Image (cartoon, rainbow, N blue to C red):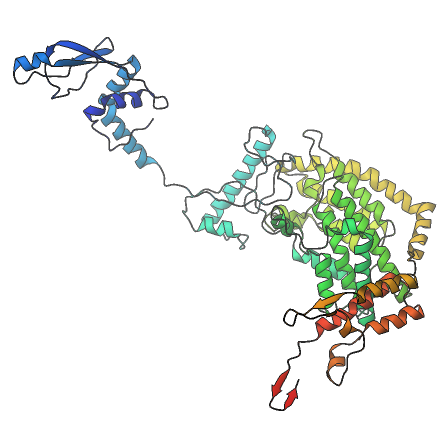
Length: 601
């Protein structure tokens, strides 16, 4: 234990405590004091320091005789006996003799110590925990050892190969930093906030080898996919009828997939994953946001609405990458139902014109093929082999490609981007989907084949390729078989059937709706809640009503449509009822002003 340097002389009265602390600071020494009567008399006027004898104990008369000897004889004299262990005695001797020397040595050591180095702290936020042995420097590529379920606490479980790879990366980055310090310009001018804060500190601060996960998927990738999916559908301009059909698709999906849709009603807001979710998903979407964009007329074409609807479920598959995850099955089921509803409410009315991108006829088999890749585990550690192929390379390299990557790789692609392209309708053939899947493995081999640090990546890619060829081969054979041709024809003519609601059923709903009441808070008067929605709005009182509301609706008009049998589906009836209240909400509040004898609106 270190003793503060300003303690040079120990107080004699605290000698026993000093002995105990010096010998073993982690354990408290027990000091036994025994009081003995002495035949001589005296008063306890002075207390001398007890010096231990060679036997390890000391006896010292603490009183000195003063005054009259008669009085002294009448008063008992106390004698203290202090037993000190040998370790404590040796520690005390070293303390007395070596205090000055230790202080001098400590002072010289402090002079030689370099200034405190500031550590580069970066927050690591990932939905799935990072694998052990991950090591990344500036503009470097991650060196994984595996894909565990927990973040590494120490390097004790890492293999020797991974440590060698990490050491090589450190040496490489050090060489680049030395070149930069000699006057060569830096290759990358973009720095993360953590890097800027570290560079503003001490110049001697060493960079810690950590993983940086700043940007996730580049926005250019998402933009390219959107452009690819909507390029040939500029003519599908959104109008009132198409907007009404979109509302029916959303309402029907919520009703038919009530249990599964509850996960997609609102934006992802779980604080445990929201940051990681935004890093991986560049275009979040949910059903409430979809409806809000419809209300605000933010969709220029029908194709853009369809893409946002599909993104709700493709985002779920791209983020939840564990094989057998319940969210994946819920997303696939909702996605299939949404496609059937789009075909029924939108495509059927637009036929033969195609107003939004069609899906690959065997999209479900393609999703199953991707699921089979997620199932593959590493032979050495049992972790997911496809972990580093699920997100773009930029996700693992601070938002930019590693040095020389684009020179060797012509078409960067990953399984997450393939999932997005599949579910947004970017693939026109099975061959295009299979080619992209194989490109993921080819890109890894092309970049890491002749690199010393790429052995681990190449092994993962080869293991993934073995499973990929099996399942993709089955998919290609199905596409060329008679069963595949039959499935293509069924997909073109597929259309779900929705029963027409009965007249009595709709009349019962209208009766229950009119039975609702409303109580005024001020006047305390209870009246019918639907009395203001029974008849059309009087345009003499609200002259600009038809300028604001393009499609008026009232309860009496709904009664006439029920009587005439105009409602072919429950969604048609539901849309008209909701339209009454949406029209009311779209009108600005009317301010009634009384000016003398004139009333003005």
